[in-house]
Image (cartoon, rainbow, N blue to C red; front, top):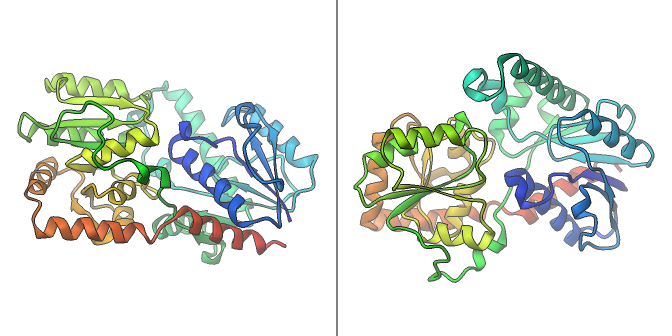
Length: 366
């Protein structure tokens, strides 16, 4: 088969989508020498170290742009692909003939809307939201198959778009091996202990404010470290921290290498997330893989992925979160049991298994 993958999200600078795309391609390269792959990439990734059955085509087009619609459709149209895989819902509507599959990671933007979810003027937000809904509707309806990372997202997609359940395939994600190779005693960054941590973005549905509220209820020696690139909603977090006079206890580490990220996990009292909704949630699994306790909002996706390996709280109950974080200081029998349960739970997921399952789906279109 001649397969194309839209790999413009390739690279860790693209956060979760970047990890997904990078690992999908790297793992496929290990297990598939029979099919031919063409990767649509940005110029910086034109020379990837991959086997001979992989090649790249440069498509320097911003996501959600007119040039993307034109250049992607052109790249597909001038080649004879048997199948195209879009690891995100952005699909060129001008591609009317080549079959494709799409990964839909979540429908969060369907559920969290309005002025609190954007920094754009109202009219611009309405236009952007309308285009988003058309993009994902088109991807869901026109694709031959859909991949979702969890059963929760599958159910959402099936219900929102009235699709047959057999069109949607649940294929989980995994934890990068690079995170597991840091010396356990090594502390790369100068961090104030004890601390709990959060990895991710600061969108409204991520509910980072709940973590700050919990910190306020913890002893003064506790700190909170936030990992991830500063984005447009970061100013709101800073304002909240300033209002609570917590600037000396909340620290933003920005983007970290895998080595630095692993070090933060290993030295943390806990990883915490108060998110209202997720599609999968890689950071809790990353934390578990490094024996870092995990405290999570009791949303369906967290419970599906992490099961009994995490402690749970209502997303709006910061006092409960604080109590759970303090309880982890005892390191009693229950603490040890959850750490071991986390290490076992992580084994259920791997990027190699994900790639194997995706390859089986590709082969349905021979």
